[in-house]
Length: 324
Image 1 (tube, rainbow, N blue to C red):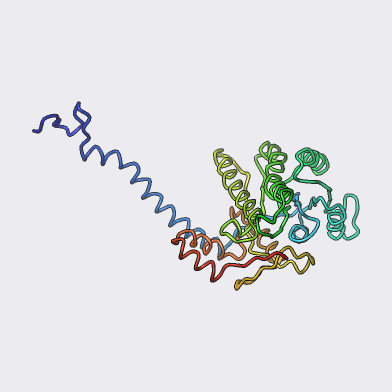
Image 2: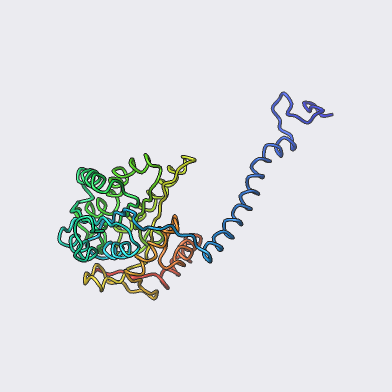
């Protein structure tokens, strides 16, 4: 027997580890990896089954608050939510636009017969957000689904973007999510029930010139929602869901507002298409929704490629964004 080696193969007093000790130490990790592989296979099978036989929760009579409801995607989501039977709380800084959205949904109904309400709020101001939360909860009792959709879209080279434009975009597109979540989450936690949704963008999965501040905010929203979901998962009995929506570039023709010039070999998605996908994702309690569905896989594949190869594929298929 060699000096310092014990008969039972345990480490000797000089601290030398044997092969059997190393194997025993690695066994728990190896076991977890094998279980993880089986769990992943099961998850893929379950995903395929759910795609064929989806289980969707009803939004009928649920109170759904939508920010940025004065026009565009927020307005379209509000319309479609009303068709689902939801009670829609429309929020926007544009007083005229948000009022119009609610009036169209109500179709002349007033008082207790109305299924839509509207509030003029700057979601980038925490004091206004807190006032909104109190007013909505006093009137409607609770918010079942919170959709943080308000956002500013603009395109220009970074050095041509003003300080005020950068700050405003970050405040509305990103910081407002913090204020809205912090204002409405406590009531959801008290009930241990609710759903928080964020509108992000395909820009959070890739990169493009002339939208540096915009893309940065969408990366931020995606990181916020992913980490927030992890916080919620820390509670074993948590029943508050999250959904992050990543649409490709929208066709803004219906609202006659041109934010940028998008040149792409890929088809631009329509506002109704994105609204429908977002609501379907909410009903299915999907953590991530991409429009189109194939977008998530293709964008993630780019990050796995060597940089020169990724640049080639971006040059081939990526959208070129110019100032409108």
